[in-house]
Amino acid sequence: MKLKIAVPSKGRISDPSIAILEKAGLGLKDNANRKLISATFNKDIDVMFARASDIPKFVEDEIVDMGITGVDLINESEANVKELVDLSFGQTKLVLASPEDSNINSIDDLTSDMVVATEFPTLTKKYLEKHDLTSKIITLSGSTEIAPLIGIADLITDLTSTGTTLKMNHLKIVDVILESTIKLITNDNSFENKKELVEAVSTSIKGVIEAERKKLVMMNVKKENLDNVKKVMPAMTGPTISEVLSKEETVAVQAVIDEDVVFELVNDLRNAGAKDILVVPIERII
Ligand SMILES: Nc1ncnc2c1ncn2[C@@H]1O[C@H](COP(=O)(O)OP(=O)(O)OP(=O)(O)O)[C@@H](O)[C@H]1O
Ligand SMILES: O=P(O)(O)OC[C@H]1O[C@H](OP(=O)(O)OP(=O)(O)O)[C@H](O)[C@@H]1O
Ligand SMILES: [Mg+2]
Image (cartoon, rainbow, N blue to C red; front, side, top):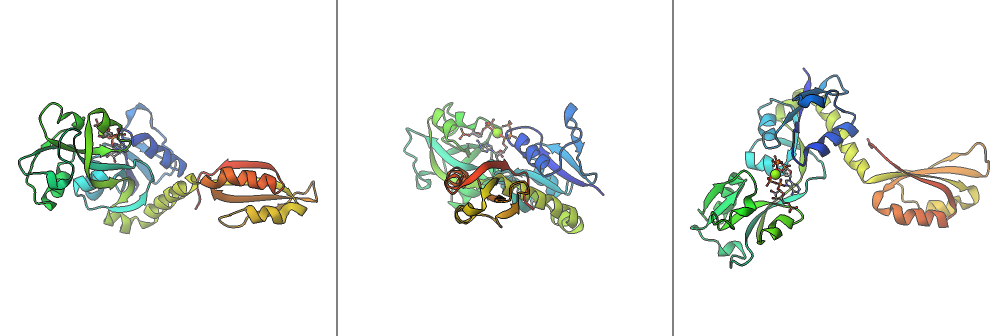
């Protein structure tokens, strides 16, 4: 039996999800023509396209073995799934927000006769219940921020990341209900019965995420400068040092380093006597 991975078919998390699979060596063979199932470069693994909000249930019900979707949608669906890898994108918060000019500034200012509009009725209901509120919930399927302006709700719960949409619609954050990122998920059955493939996929994807924050730095160093270069080199393992056959007095040095130290490190390496410095992206670290 093939392993099926559900990937968002549209919306903001579709392209980055496909890009991660490609980098993990699971490029799509027939992504054209809006086909809903595509083979990948691994003959045992297919990708199925679905709406991000349907993916948690598809994974729970074993329609697919694995899926990529947001924590917000996983929790809203109440699906019983296993989170395997945090894909480090789609960082967002589900917040309770009120009109800027209202005097609702904290959850304590809410009353049960207020109306809350949302795309997340389950999470919103649970949140209100936790605070002993039975406020009415109106479920919308998008553009929730408009609800207070047009007078159909007193408050909203919605996702925010940059804060621009809230600001543009004169809303302020009252409370944070949930923090969300995009996850690779599976179900217990696939995890046990297709263990090898499930683990191969999650290991490859972890490798991609790990590699995104790293660079390979390569350079030539005269032997007399090698000690100085080693001193400034914070390597994951190593650095690796090899002889340069054409130049006896020179060695080639390479190391994997964190992306956020590259700028400083290249300067330090030059000052320590490194030459021909190359900074190279890495696709995967396993
Ligand atoms: N503003 C945002 N910033 C970061 N991540 C977000 C943001 N909005 C949504 N997300 C994440 O992306 C997931 C999918 O959202 P998206 O809006 O792309 O899908 P959709 O609502 O199904 O599509 P569309 O809005 O195009 O109809 C969300 O469930 C959430 O995890
Ligand atoms: O804090 P910001 O960066 O402004 O992002 C927040 C907006 O992004 C999402 O909307 P989306 O673009 O997905 O539209 P939708 O409401 O139609 O789903 C979310 O529902 C907010 O409206
Ligand atoms: Mg959306």
